[in-house]
Length: 499
Image (cartoon, rainbow, N blue to C red; front, side, top):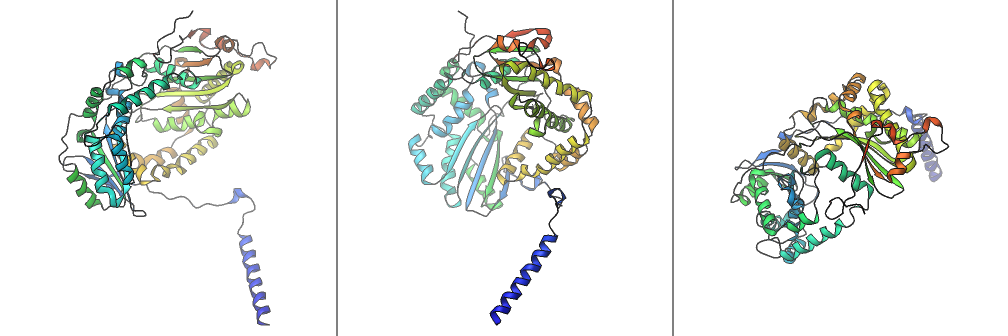
């Protein structure tokens, strides 16, 4: 009897809770109410410390696991390399990790790092260099000593250097295989010039000219405390890790600070540029000069570009070229900003040969529309909500957050940027979007870079049975004027003489 009564009471309780729960379920997903996300961005100064030699150290404790990550960032990169040594920076960074250290060869160093379960890397990019070690807290002392010797006294082992150099040279053989790679390369030449580090490319001659002495010289210019910042995350005590770094780095002398990043002096000629390649899919990049990262209109431009082509399926270019017309799987736009000088605005799509001209017309049509008509309230609110709701991702990991703070300090980003970002996004209006489009989208000053079968592309779909409103040829752009770029040898990148 007691068992029956107990079962009955349980059933009644479950039924009552189900009724209560069901009453809380909205009739439609659109009726679901979410609590407003409250997120206060961290302040860099709360994590910033400084060694006695002036090196900034950003520290974020995290005691979930007995692991420590120490990341070094240095000012300097490929921009410091002469044009005839293009590729030296990347090769030097790779060899710092793979080429051993003064006290041991590369194989022995690899074994030591493996024994200590230490993940170690080094690299040199266009404008900054970096190195990091991730290891157990218990092995940090031994691992850091080897890591520091790698930074201070890399061996640049001759055999490893030869292997790495041959790998790079072998990779050059396939540089003309991918149309996207060709389009980006040729656009770089047009926009930046082949003397500026943004436009130039490594060649067989430049790689073969690089010596171990070249790598040692570049390493010495970049890797020293005068160019250095440090970020530490993991199972550390700030006071103890600062004392640890102070002791370990005390004998590292400060060298000459790396020079300023050079401005590009290339003045490009707007127009249509073709690179002949027999392929079924055509790559098109449409570009003009962009803006600096800290331009006062940068957030207005960001919202405008997200509406135009930067937000995937919700953007106009993607919706028109891909969704409505079915002309491309990939289509969109991006503002690639620089800190020291204006970057580049680029719209892009990959399409079939006959529809290249039509897709280009549609992209230019969307640029014209966003310049001549105000964006709708719904469009702006979608982008504002997206930017604001995804904002916390900038700080979702402590390692990424410390890297962000280092980069902000190195590049002089305003101290209140992250604290005021969301308010600035919220304040963007329809007129702000239109003014940004009018100011920074310049189709009459654009370079249209096209890779594919040139004569077929030029003809467009004029000979098809398509609706006359969809018939288009490349003669519509720049009054039909165009330039066919020379074919390039994949290893030397020099023009190949036509037979």
